[in-house]
Image 1 (cartoon, helix red, strand yellow):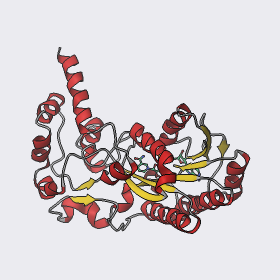
Image 2 (image 1 turned 120 degrees about the vertical axis):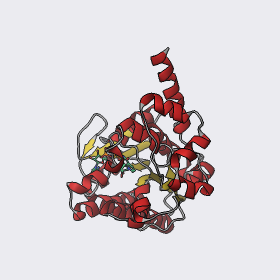
Image 3 (image 1 turned 30 degrees about the vertical axis):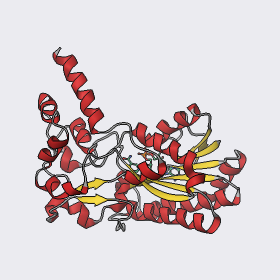
Length: 309
Ligand SMILES: NC(=O)c1ccc[n+]([C@@H]2O[C@H](COP(=O)([O-])OP(=O)(O)OC[C@H]3O[C@@H](n4cnc5c(N)ncnc54)[C@H](O)[C@@H]3O)[C@@H](O)[C@H]2O)c1
C-alpha cells in the first residue's frame, strides 16, 4: 500500500516509517518538521495540502500519528490544539473519503481516559487502582485529551456515515524521556520506565508494531478503539492491594524482582493507582506487546550476570 503517514518526523513516525517500508509499503510522510521520512513538509490543518498529499501520491491508506501532544501544552494555545488535532483529523477523514482511501489508523492516547479524579490518585484518597478499559467514559482533564477524544469521535462518525474503516489506537506512554515528575524526582529514568511497564507504558517498537497490525486488520474490523500498552500481570482483584502495597503485589507475580531491583538500587512505586488493560486489543485486534515487565527483568538479569560474572 501507499501510506500517508502524518507525524513522520516524530518519535513514533521515525520508528514506524522504516518498518512500513520493510513490510513492502510505500510511505509518504507529512510533518511540519523536515526529516528523512518526510516528503510533504506542512500541516494537516492545511486542507489543500492534505488534499494534494493524498491525491498527488494516490495514497491507499492513512496512518495519522501527527499531533500536538501533552508536552506541547506548554508551548501551544488551545486553539492550536483544536486546529491540529481536531480540524487536522477532519481534513484527513474528509479527503480520505473524497479520494477513496481504503483505511485509516489513528494514534490516540490513554491519557484521554484520565480525569482529574483519576489523576489525583492516592493523594486524592483513592483506595483502589482504576482498572481502565475502552468501556470507561472518558472525562479528559486537559486540551490534549479533549482534542484527541474529539478526533476519535470524528473517526467513528466517518465510519458510520461513509463506511471508512478506521482503527483507533489509544497508546499508553512511549516517551523516550521521563514524563512524570512526581515519579522522576526520586527515581532514575530507567527505574521509572521499568516500573511503568507494569501498568502504563510500552516500547516505541511495540507501538509501531501495533500500527502495522491495525493497518492490516482495519478492513475486517470496520471501526474500533483499542488500548495498546504492555500486558499488565495484575487482575482487577488486585486493585485494592495495588494502592495499599504495590511492591508486595509485584513480588507475588515476579518473585525475582526484589533482588534484581536491589542489585541496581532501584525501587518500586509504593502505590499503583491505574492500570491500562489492553486485553480488548489482544482478543479482537490480535495484538499484544512483545516487551513487558517480565522481559525487562530478564534483560536486567542478563545484564547483572554480565556485570557480576
Ligand atoms: N509519546 C507518547 O508517550 C505518546 C503516548 C500516547 C499517544 N501518543 C501519540 O502518538 C503520536 C506520536 O507521538 P510522538 O511521541 O511520536 O510525538 P512527537 O512529538 O515526537 O511526534 C509528533 C509529530 O507530529 C508532528 N505534528 C505536529 N503538528 C503537526 C501538524 N500540524 N501536521 C502534521 N504533523 C504535525 C510533529 O512535528 C511531530 O513530528 C501522537 O499522536 C501522540 O498524541 C504519544
